[in-house]
Length: 609
Image (cartoon, rainbow, N blue to C red; front, side):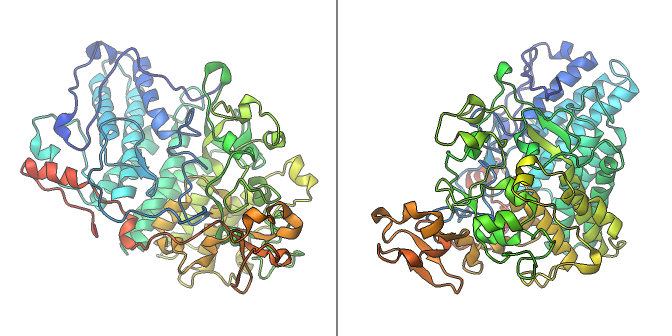
C-alpha cells in the first residue's frame, strides 16, 4: 500500500537544533553516527524524518499547524464572531524555538525564528557528501544530495516568506565559530538566489521516481518549487519592483511546473470532493503526493471531524469570499444570465456558482459556522449525514482516516498559468488560449460526482481570452486576466495553504481591513423567517442582526421577524485592530537581539518593528 512513510529514527538519533541562542544547541555526537552513514538505505531512512515537517497533510491527532481548515483560517476569506483576530502590534519579547516541532506563526502562515531544519538539511548534505564514491553510486549521490538541497530550499523559502532577510547557512556551524553563528541577517535576495541554485540542482538531479510515488521525487519537488518560485517572483515584482529577479524566479516556476504537466502522469479525472474526503488517494491521477492515514496503524487526524457539520467552525466564509465565486456560465454574478445569480443566499449560491462552491459548502445555513456558511470540503459525502446521531470514528474526534492531498495538479497548473501571465506583463510571451485550456479550463472540466449531478450542478463554462469577465469589483491595478487567475486560485484553495500567502505576495494585505472592505464582517444572505426561524426567539433579541443591501443594519427586537432578511452579521462582529504594511514580515524577538548584543554582535530588527 502506497503511503508516506513516517518513520522515527530509533536506529540513530542525531540531535539537531540551531535557533535563537546558537551556543545552546546540543553537540553532534550521536549513537553510532559513524556506522549509520554506510549505505543508501540509511540515507533514505534519514530523509523520512523530514516528511512530517514538510508534507503535513492533515497532521495527526489534534495537530493544527500547517493544516487546512484548522490551521489556515487567518485571511480575508474567513470571519469569526466578535472582534476579528489581529496582526501583531509590537515585536515579541522572544521569538525562537530550539526544537524541530512546527512552531509556526499563524498570522504569517510560516515558521518561527528557528534554524533547526536548516541545520538538519546541512548535516544531511554533509553526510551524503562524505559517502560519495565510497557508499553511494554517482546516480545515488546526485539524487540524495538533491533531496537534501530540496529540504534546505523548502525551509529557507518558508523562513524568507515570514522574516524577509535571514541568516543563510550552507554548512553545519561549529559552536566556536562565533562570527558565523552570530552574523547578522543576509539579504532576502542573497538567500533566495541560494535557494534558486538549490532548486535548479534538484530539478536536474533528483530521481523521477524513487520506488513508490509516495517518496519524494522530481515531480513532487517540481510542484513545490513552482509554489515557492511563484511566491518569490511575485514578491519581487510587487514589493521590490525588481523585474529582473521577478523574471528569474517566475521562469523557474514555469520550468518546474512544465516538468509535471509534460510528464503525462497526472490529469484531472477526480471530482473535487474526492480529493479531500477519500479514504484512499492511491491511484488518484490528480494527486502528486498524499499523506496516508490508516486506523490499523494508528495514523489518524481530526480535520474531517471539523467538517462533519456538527463540530463548530469558529472561522467561516464571509461575503467577500462568496462574491468572488464565478457563476456557472463563466460570468461574474453582476453580469450573469444564470437565474437568480445575484441572489446571494446559500441555496441560490449552490445552484448558480462554480461547482466547487457546492463541493465546499453545506447547502443551507448551519449555526455551527460563525457566518452560517459551513464548509464540508474535508470529509466525504457520507460523513455529514450522521449529523444528529453518533459519528463513526472515521468522521469524529481525532480518529479520522481520510487521506490528505499534499501536492496536487491543480496547484501546479495554477502556479504555471499565473507565472506565465505575470511574465507577460514584464516582457514575456503573451498567454495563449491553449495555456488557459491546459490550466483553468482543465480544472473546470473535472468530473462531477453523483451528489452534485443530483442537485443539478453543472460544470462551469470555460474561460476565453477573447471575452474575459469584466468584473466591476476588480482592482484597477490588476489586469483582467491576472484577476481571473487569482479568482481561480481563490475558488480552488478555500481553507488550504494559499490565501494569506497570496494576498501577501500580491501586496494586497489591505483586503483584511474591514474599514475599507465591509464584506468581511457579514456572511451570506439569509431569510430568517423562512430558512432559519429557530433563531427568531427571545434569546436572540438585540443579538441577531442582518445587513440590508443598502448597508442598513436591522437588529431583531422580538417583533420584527419579517424584517430579518439580509446578510447575516456574526454576533458582536467588529473589525480587527488597525495594521500597517509592516505586517507583511514578522519581527524577531527582543531577547534574540539582546543575545547578539551580549556576544558583541548585532541582529537587525525587521523594518518597521
